[in-house]
Length: 129
Image (cartoon, rainbow, N blue to C red; front, side):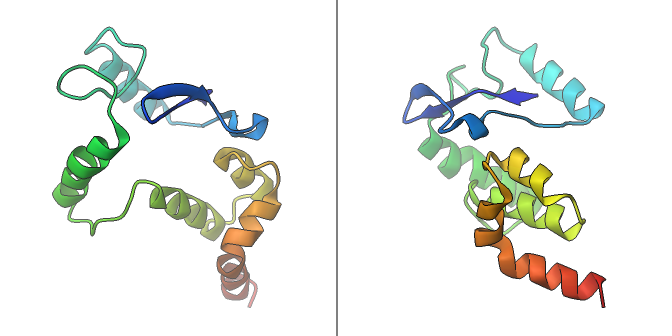
C-alpha cells in the first residue's frame, strides 16, 4: 500500500515532504479486507461516509472514530495519537529505527529520537540488562 496524497480541510494535497511519500507494508489478510471495502463503492478513496463522500476529518473524529473506540472498549484518543502508538510499538519490538522513520514519513531517525528518545532508552535498558 502506498500513500501519495492527503486530504486536508477537504482539499487533496501531496504529502508534506518527499520523505512523506512512503510504502506501508500490510499483510495479505489486510490487503484482502481493503479490496473488499473498495468493491463497495466506485470511489478512488477507501473510507467514505454514509453519503458516499470522503470523510471530513472533524466529522470522522467526532462520529466514526469515537464510535469505533467505544465499540472496542478503548479510552478516547485522537487519531493522530495512533502514530505514537505505532512508533512506540515498533521501537519496543526492536525494529530498525531507519525503517520506523521511513514508515512514519521522517527523513531520518533524528525526528524519531526527538519524539521517542525516552522510550528508546527505556527499551534498551530493559532488553540489554
